[in-house]
Length: 391
Image 1 (cartoon, helix red, strand yellow):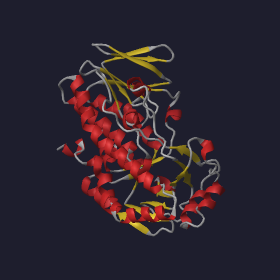
Image 2 (cartoon, one colour):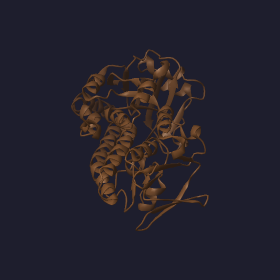
Image 3 (cartoon, one colour):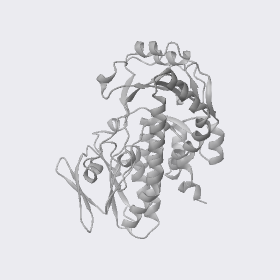
Image 4 (tube, one colour):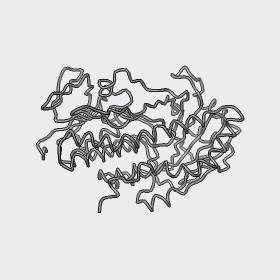
C-alpha cells in the first residue's frame, strides 16, 4: 500500500535487502524487493551468524524480534583463547545484553532470511530478477533488469552485496580487497564438548578455530588460515585434513570437524571494502555489503546491514525531503561503519601473523588491548541505536 504515494525499489533480497523492504514499508512506502535467485530456497543459502546487540535491537525494531528469538540460540559468553583453550579474554555478553535489552543470538543465515521474508511477505518480493542498470531523472528512478523489463520508483536502494551492480554504477573502479586468508565452516551434529552458550575462538599461528551452539543441539564452527584467493589457493578442505591441522589444539576443534556430515564443509574467501564518501546520488543509495563490506572478524556485517535498514527507514519516516533523508541516512551510518570495517581489518591482520613472535604478540594484544577494546567494538553499533530512543 502506498500510504504516502511513493514507491521504493530494493535490489537484493538477502538480510539487508529484506530488512530494508520491511523498514521502508513501515515508513509508509510501497516497497518491492528484487532478488536474482530464482526461488526462496536458493535465496536462503549460507552459513551461520552471531548477531550482537545492534543486530538484535534492529530485528526487534523491524518486528522480527520474537521470530528471531525462536530460531536463535542465546550467547551468554564470548571467549578468545589460545589453541589449548586457555582464556585470554572473556566477556559476559549475555549479562551486558540484558542491560542493553538485546542478548546476542546465534542462528543460521537461512533461518534469519526466512524470518525476514515471512515478515516482508511474498507480495513484496520478486524472485529471478537480475539488475542490469539504473537510470534516474528528476521525477524518479528506473531499474532495468537483464530480461528487459523495467521497474519505476521514487527511490532505489542497492542492497545487492559485495559485487553490487548499484555500487558498480556509482564507483566503476572500486574493487573489493582480499585480506590474504580464507575460512572453512560447517555445522556439527555433535557438540564435541563445546560449552553451551559460549562463543569461543581458539587462536594459533596464523590460524583460528571458532565455534558456538545453534538451536536444536547443533554446533557451528569455522576455521581460518592464510590462503591465496580462490579455491586453488589452499587445498585444506577435507575433513581429515582440517582435523589433522587442529589435532594438537583443544580436542573440541577436531571433534567438531569430525562430527560434520560428509560434504558439509565449505570454503569461502573473505573480502572487505571501505565505505566511500559517496554512498549514493540523488534518489539512489546503498546499504550493507554494497556500501561497506567488512570481514567477519568482528561478526558485525549482518548486524550492520540490519541497522542500516532501521536508520534508513527512520530517516524516511521522519518527513521532510526524500533526498535529504537519503543523505541524512548516509551521514549517520558512514563514520560508524567505516570504523567497523577498519577495526575488523585490524583484528584479522593481527590474527594472521604466522611467526612465533607474531603469535605471541597477538596473544598479548588479546589479553591487554583486546580486553579493553573488544566490549566497545561489540557495542559500537548499538550505541545511539534508534530502537533505544523509542519510549
